[in-house]
Amino acid sequence: MTLSIIVPVYNMASDDKLSFCMDSLVNQTLEDMEIIAVNDCSTDDSLAILKDYEIRFPDRVRVYSTPENLHQGGAKNLGMEKASGEWIGFMDADDWMVPDGYKRMLKLAMDTGADMVGCDYCMVGEHTFVPTEGAHNNHPDQTGVLDDGKYRSLILDAGSLVVKLYRREIVIDCPSRFPEKIFYEDNALANTWMLRARHFEYVDEPLYFYYQHDSSTVHIINPDRLKDRMEAGRIMIDEAGKHGYLDRYHDELEYSFARLFYLNTLMSYMIGVRPRRAGWVRRLGDEMRETFPDFESNKYFVEKVHPEERKWTRMQQKSTVGFMCAYILKSIYRGMRKR
Image (cartoon, rainbow, N blue to C red):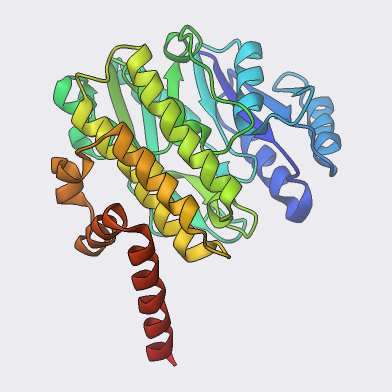
């Protein structure tokens, strides 16, 4: 049972990030495994590092390069073209996996007949195999042969794509590919792949280490990154329409879109972008309402969104200027109290 792990790489040479990631992969106890590293036009020594691993581990490592900087989505697409494994997985180039992680995940798949398998992860700020408190990526109620209720649960809480392995036919035979030249590409495609699976299992342990550092995507807030998040939300809904599951899972997708496209973007913009522009916020709110006019009445939105966030949403939908003035004043007040 062969496994292809695809690693998109862009400027990860510093602080041994890429080397630690690659070491964790070449030292996996799973024997029948290929590592497909895709250099996305790095400007540092990443390609040289990858070529060194390819020379030292010719039976395990294959290195490719994109013709231009396509971001992770484009690098992953190229990796998928080259993958030969019966199972497909992905790893970020600054993360790592415990030595027997992939072996354990595939054994669980073989024992249960699953065609999608995952694990938990932990977030760390240093290169270590000592886990912190793990983050539950999924939960037991989502596992087993997938039915309508489990699909709905997975749309609401799919967990991270990098801690899942998929049978080849789920991803390679799917006509959809990652969007290129944007971040948040996983959000755009995860539902389409997940709904092609028939049986999901996962290891309830943090086998995957998610490295937190200043250049991590989640730590960078600027209008371009926020626009990428919005575009990922649009593609997520386009995918649902194209593959025929938008109406069936309307409520779950409406909530997912409201969270990804609108609410997370709105809060990130107000917290991290300077100067704040009312026109930008107004257009965000208008598109949310145009896409899903009744999103504030969505049962999941009412149940899962914090009351204060719902209050800000109501305020922004009523008046962008009023919302921004109130938010800024409250931020100033909170800052003064902390002093």
